[in-house]
Image (tube, rainbow, N blue to C red; front, side):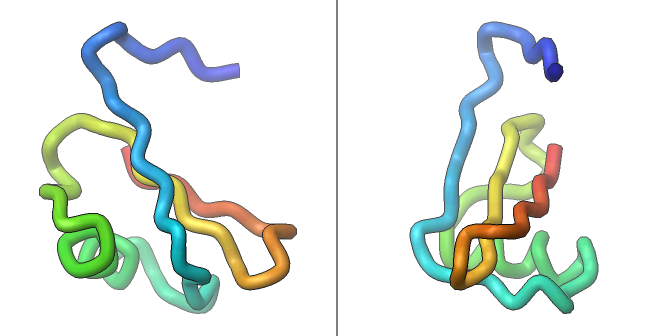
Length: 58
């Protein structure tokens, strides 16, 4: 269970993400796909094509 501050927004990538990407690759995907700064303090969620795996950046 995560307890996040009320100011934190949750962004979910709508396109499938390659789960072989490292966290550096996911931060680049944050900039390109979601068009947000990965260091902004918000939560970014990425799913694989079958929606069986998830990776998150916070």
